[in-house]
Every structure is written in structure tokens, then in C-alpha cells.
Image 1 (spheres, rainbow, N blue to C red):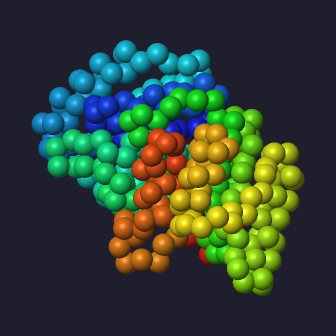
Image 2: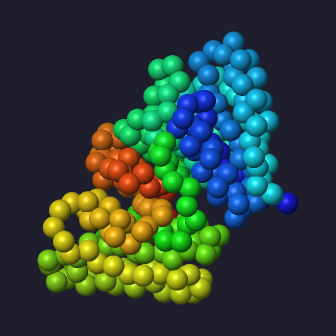
Length: 268
């Protein structure tokens, strides 16, 4: 029985193709329904899109246990992807960062607008994101309780794919803050140990921004997926350079982003 649902916003662009390819790649390990979601500006566009979607689905090479369906609706990617994902009960939205259809463009900052309007986790890919076996997942946490929201989701992914989770924190010069960071990382390790998930703890000490440190670590350790909980307090969260730099990283790594606006109720 199919229990998982991955939604792929699909606009017939190369980035949309990359998101679909990544969803199919994940489907080799997790029996799931992949729902291709296309949002149109007008009802007449929807008729043409339905025909094109049928053609796309008929030519997809599906792994065993994967079902592909479609959903074509009139709407806006910035307002409706999150609503549809919640209504459909999706576990994950797999989305490209800069596909476009008409005026509905998905560059880095606009992708953040979509992510922050949704309670469903997103996995963001780029056109050249490689399809590799997921052996190493890195999650970036800080001293906020909201950052811990990525822990359970990353653990679920690690269980699916037999991956190691690298828990990355930033070393603080202040001794008290540094100890708090170490304690927080040990809490995460204890949770993963209880779930029989292999994890590694790393306090990054080099100079530069946290995002630079995370990306350098990802390159050095051959990380296959980066995970973060998004919890900016900015009035314009789409301009959060930390999250944007990770989802549009030069290594083309997939980035899993969880909007943690409800994190005050639950750490993990």
C-alpha cells in the first residue's frame, strides 16, 4: 500500500524535469505516490496542460512501487502550493529553484516565499542536482529551539536511505554559549542513538559566515543532502541570505527546508 505522497510542482521546464527525476530517484527506496502539480493562470491553459501532463506521465520510467498522478489547477505558485500540499497530506514537496512558466518565476528568493507559506517540508533541487545514493545528510542547527525541527525529518530520511546524519553547529567564542551548543548537539545525538541512526557531531571553527562553513563542510565530507529549519524573524524572509545560499548552492546539492513557525510547540 502506498503511504507516502511527494508533490512535484511541474512547469515543463528543465528544472521541473530535474525535480521529477529526483522524486523518482527517491522512489527507488520509498514506495510513494508522486503527484505532478501544475498551476495555470487561466482555465484554457489548464486544458492544454492536462494533455501535456498525460504525455509526460506516459513517458516516465517508474521504479517499482511508485505511482505517478497529476493535479492541474488554476492558481498561483506563491499562494497555492502550500495549501494543496497540506490538503493532499503530502510528506514532502520536491521543487526546482528557478523553473518558470509565464510570469510565475521560481528563483531563489521567490522559492523562499513558497517555502515560508507552507507547513509541508520542501526538498529543493537545481537543474544540475546529481542523482546520487544518499549516504551522508548534513543538518545545520544553532542555539534556537526552532532549528531542532529539522532533526526528526532528517532522521526519517536517514532511515529510508541508510544514511549518516552529520549534525553541524558553529563554535562560539563565548564559553557559556559554546557549552550550550555542545549540549544541544548531544541532545540530538541521543535522539538519533535511540533510533539507531548513525550520526556525527561537528563544531565548525573556521572564519566566515555560517552558510560558507556549512557548504565547505558539505564539499569536504561528500554530503549528499543539506537540511535546515527555516526560522527567520525577518519581515521579508525571502531575503534571508542563509537559507537562500543553501538552496542555490554552487555544488547543486539538494536542500531540505522545514518552515519551523510552529516549532514553539514541539522540538522534534
